[in-house]
Length: 124
Image 1 (cartoon, rainbow, N blue to C red):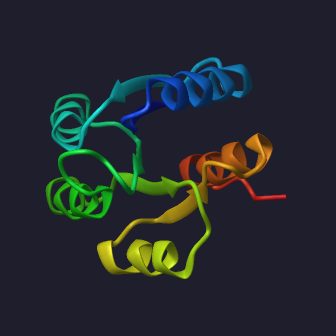
Image 2 (image 1 turned 60 degrees about the vertical axis):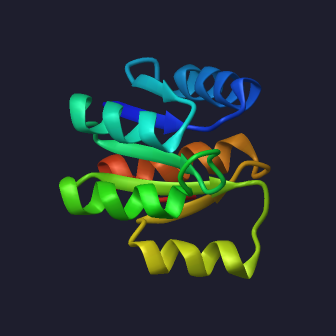
């Protein structure tokens, strides 16, 4: 499974990628620091899933989501941020993302959200 993960924080990218690979050693995860880089890597690698921070430094994750959805309508897109605010949930619906996960959610829940989208595993 190929994935692009966009977050401007090196620490967040490293920790989440390390955790996901522990659960799913076969996942190939490309990292991006900006919305533009996420778009480029997504169009180049054609991943199964794109994980986007809502607050990227150049282009908001919601806008990147819309652009990816237009270019690759079948790719799964998950938005993430530090909170579970109503605004975040509304943003997910408005931009066409498949799901939302909080960066502060337990890592097992974080993983289950992504895995359920990829291979229709139930979220327990």
